[in-house]
Length: 425
Image 1 (cartoon, helix red, strand yellow):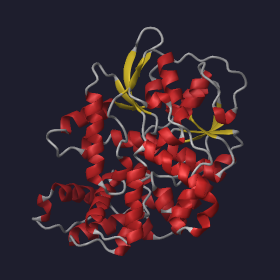
Image 2 (cartoon, helix red, strand yellow):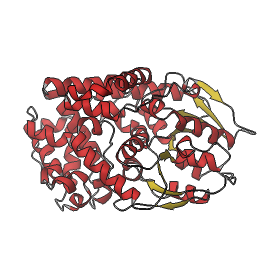
Image 3 (cartoon, helix red, strand yellow):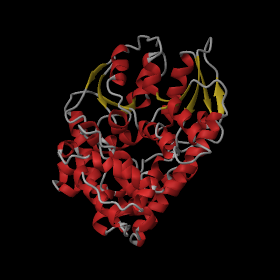
Image 4 (cartoon, one colour):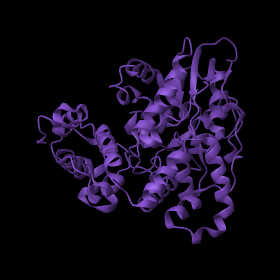
């Protein structure tokens, strides 16, 4: 793609990066075949190729982003399926991140939209506040029809019951059972602590059972992805630095383990996020290199499987952040099969479920279409349980389907001597 940036514009490192990315695009359109929003809308501007043109126009003109540009960039899921498809290696992820940052800095959104995004960025990364809000949402569910549509969708998604805080999610160290083979830090997340505390509990049982000392570091917390994908880059970088400092203080650390693939994609990008910060760049690259999805770590370990009895057929949902963001394909499936589960994959397994961080809250109509489509495809496999490696996907699929959805690590914990997942009991 030909660009027309001025010499002055190209002095900006962000514009230099955008120029390099844009020039790799050859307009082939292969990305449109795997883009969920294009498949649903059929609008070129809701495809990666269309958004690339819009981003190019926005950056070259260096003006306040138009309403049209903002609308179509907001509709992007950042599922990164286009990057898996692209034969030219266009780095769409960092291009759309840059566009979101530019929109956040220079666009005056409608008051409600602006306020709602601020509200999400305040609530979701703070487990205590998120838990409190869910409790409030469960109380006002009967009156949700009186509220604005966006808030109605959010309250409808709130679970009927809210978990209390898990004792494993406070800073502490969990010793290995027997000789310690590895020392790992667990990224225990933010929203996941509230929506699925059993995931961290299963992760710690599974890792300590197989010779890992697991550390929940003091001052570690939200990875920053929720703010980052809303264009709020400064708060996201601040969270990244806080986590980097927390994990860098741990001696002899073998890995930073993540059991939410959306968080993992962001952690592995810390080196890029802080590349221009001389104080943090080297540490950020080190932490990114230590980051491993739980399935990556388990693949390299000798798991000891027990015989929990008859195991169900599992439909495996590969989160976009797993298959497109981190390029982790068959690892989780192989682990489940080694554990004795029969694993099936759905049609359109490459398509997003519509969760995408806060997308199902900010774009509920599109997210709902994608969620139902994903749940229907998973149900058609004939499986009795769905496994996934990302809490957002789990909540989204369960809302639109009628099968229990559990984390892959819960099934592996069960198959190696842990308790049966509560949703299957």
